[in-house]
Image (cartoon, rainbow over all chains, first blue to last red):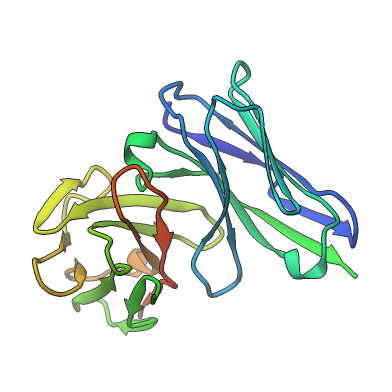
Amino acid sequence: QQQVKQSPQSLIVQKGGIPIINCAYENTAFDYFPWYQQFPGKGPALLIAIRPDVSEKKEGRFTISFNKSAKQFSLHIMDSQPGDSATYFCAASMISNTGKLIFGQGTTLQVKP
Amino acid sequence: NAGVMQNPRHLVRRRGQEARLRCSPMKGHSHVYWYRQLPEEGLKFMVYLQKENIIDESGMPKERFSAEFPKEGPSILRIQQVVRGDSAAYFCASSQTSNTEAFFGQGTRLTVV
């Protein structure tokens, strides 16, 4: 019940494409859903986060869509660039304890020039 | 404002030795979280500490692993009698309060030979 399932495991798109990464969770007590970006040899960096009271949130080229009834959320990267090539992790936690995160398995994204 | 500082960045230990990993949280942050990342996997929560207190150690292996966050100085993750399976990247995160976003450090890559 504590799992967060992420797909796909890897993704290749052309520059300008819109990669979509999906996550599903089981624990309905989760109410904080962040996405992290990680470059090789670096720590995860927070990209964007959403709460269940909204269905969509945009920050720059990154958009989270959230479906509470399906217990799913996804990350869309608009106008993707080669510099977006990285590993992306979705995560879930309770807003009362945002540091205790359950992470998905990660998606390695490659954006080709 | 410096980010979360972890040292060393790389650590090599022989089987049976002790590994000590240090984490200095961001200025003003009193909540510290440790995570472990095995190759090609997501991050797994290990322990949550506040100054001088362990709040949640549900992800810590029962033996050989311990963590502390003293009143003065960095948080320490200690692994005694390391084994090859302990080889991983260990990340520390900090937050200002329990319900604000957590920021990750660059990690310590532990290799057990």
